[in-house]
Length: 488
Image 1 (cartoon, rainbow, N blue to C red):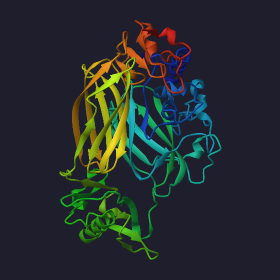
Image 2 (tube, helix red, strand yellow):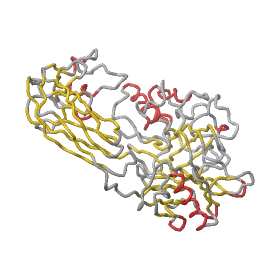
Image 3 (cartoon, helix red, strand yellow):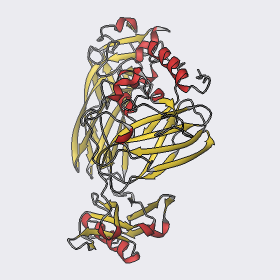
Image 4 (cartoon, rainbow, N blue to C red):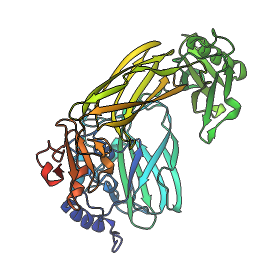
């Protein structure tokens, strides 16, 4: 449904849309346009469960903040436009008024660790954009007072020209958080629409942890955090980025030539030295009391002068596969006996590396009927898994990944299950595969060891209505499970 704007009144159209919206929160036919996705708007954080007691905003983050364009002042000498003071987060709409509450602890804050940031919007019914603007609260603002125009800096710290073209979801707006901003702040993101009188106002709550500009013109642009041991033949690359993308001239790569160099503290030191030897506008190391930056064997920060254009460094590990790594099923029983469809499968595995291991048992139709996962050391390890299945040939699949993530090994063994079967077949063990439940889907409820079948349409829609805090339709358990499921 599209809003109609009469005599330049976007607000009238929004009001009618909000009346409809209040009658049906989750309807897809209401006006719904877009929201700030990265960092998440206050309303999107509500939908994600990061914020609570949000009213209608948690259902419709894309509808929040739509009102007149013209923030912070009117256009061409016209009266003040945009959302009224005290109602900036909601756009003045009563359905979203819960967002106007303001205190130092009311809202979840997204941590901002780098001053160079890519803002990102998600559009559900896109309109042409004349511009996107980003305002931020003034230094010394009171987080326990309602947000007003006077709470924000009078000018945006970043403006992106929209060219009156339809923006794309996920497109990045590269901006720099002002150097004097740190700690708790509110960012006001504004999408000004080109074909109506409206703009969309989204606030985002942030905690700016990025270091301010340092004496001598240096700014912190990243760090070298040694955490992984490397092998001979591996490489480490420090990738430099500017506002326009990667800067190859400031990127540095070093090889690991010995076991000693592969020690985390040692390769961190070697990489920091290589950066310092190659550049004068970029330095890596630790600053002393005189501002001198020198490498250490450990954590090293990376600093850059503004003239370099570098705004961010990322460390990339290019690791070779560990060809000597081994993983296998060492021993298992010739067969396992089911008792009313249930059995405990015990077997041993052998690894010569520390690994994260997952074992899965598949039946003849390749449906998983049991699994277990754990971290194992070098040597033999006994594993056990609970299985619910029917007699027949089964396949035990073992997958392990070394702790540094460089190498994956797999082993597959056939095994037999005999005895008494489980009876009713099923497609999933609840709540696995929740998004795929449709009419006729059969699930095993592990809490009761019973199988349930999802009812035909339209009741089948209830089969997916589950979360750890809202489980009214959980098969066999929820208060209203009979509305969605039939017990087999």
